[in-house]
Amino acid sequence: MDEAIENAKEAIALWIETVLDAGQSMPKPGSVAACQKKRAFKSWVWASLEIDPALLSDVSLGGTVRLVERLLINAMRQTA
Image 1 (tube, rainbow, N blue to C red):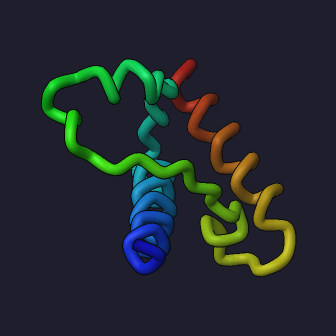
Image 2 (image 1 turned 180 degrees about the horizontal axis):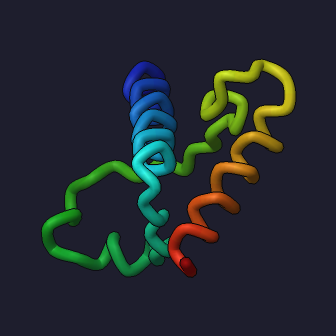
């Protein structure tokens, strides 16, 4: 289970980075409870994951700043 969670964290971080690099917008967060009620997800195991913002940046220091910068750039592209 621990390895699966670590793999999920890596996959999420890579997905976020791919979306930001492509200039796409991030989807709005949804309700976990709503997803858990769906028949398709009935037997799934659920976990809450924390993603380190530093993983989303080429810069080792200031990863949070870089992530915020990328989100702001994408937001400006969406409104232009």
